[in-house]
Amino acid sequence: MISGSKAERIAADYLRKKKFKLIEYNYRTRFGEIDLIFEKRVSLKEKLIVFVEVKMRNEKSIAQPKEFVDYSKQQKLIMAATEYLTRNKCKLQPRFDVVEIVCKDDEIISLKHLENAFTIS
Image (cartoon, rainbow, N blue to C red):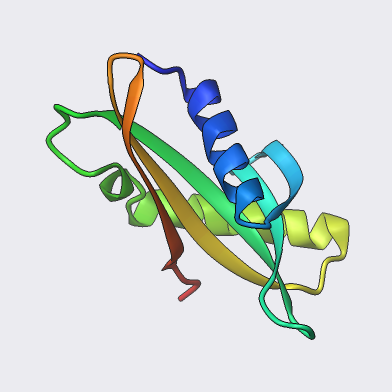
């Protein structure tokens, strides 16, 4: 089985290939951890700060990895992101993405990048 840290590295490499710029890796707060934080240019004038949750599951899991980013987890990520933005004086528009990885033993059989997976409500 692929470890969580290896899944995060795989997700980071995947997003770098999509022209995301890595800012932080495993950012820890009192509210929990943000797996990856990226900056992404979406137009000539606009950049986003993207908070990424990486979820990995075995192919035999009863649910898709994204289903484990439930409301409670989303609220923790939002609070952690708010703390990051406050400490780092960032004025970029935030976005929350999920990268879901499904594996079989040590092989990745599916990787999906879900942009704007949830929003601040």
